[in-house]
Amino acid sequence: MRPHALIEGSRSATLRQWWSVTTTLIAVAILIEAVFAGAMLSGVEWARAAHAANAVILLASTSAASLVAIVTLRRIPHGTKLGLTLLSLAAVVFLQTAAGKLSAEGANLMWAHVPLGAALVGFAGLAAARARRLGGQ
Image 1 (cartoon, rainbow, N blue to C red):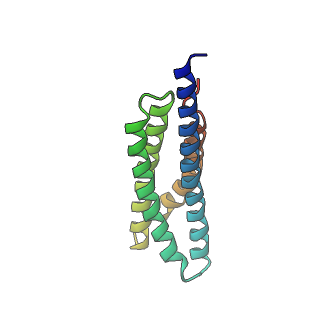
Image 2: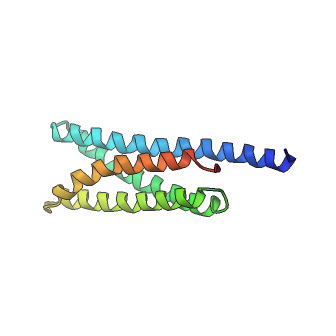
């Protein structure tokens, strides 16, 4: 085996591990958002503030992760797919946040907000799966 191939393999493994952790944390934050929503609907007073704060954190983290992935992973196998998946996830989180904010202000958008939140769980799982393939064949 060529020496630079070992270095590249080690680099890919490190990137794969880092991005797997990052995408898993994003997926967990999306699940926690659903927990806060359920608590809010159950009448727990602090849940509305937690739901709103977590939405801002999700928006910032998915946006930052997508930009970093697009810039740094473009030459890594499956890196562009991961970057575009994270960018798409950030766009959906933005739409979800906007629908939630408008719903809180009285707009009739809860019909879109709830199923979009459920879809985000699957979308985050897709990002985590793509992170696990990063640098591979």
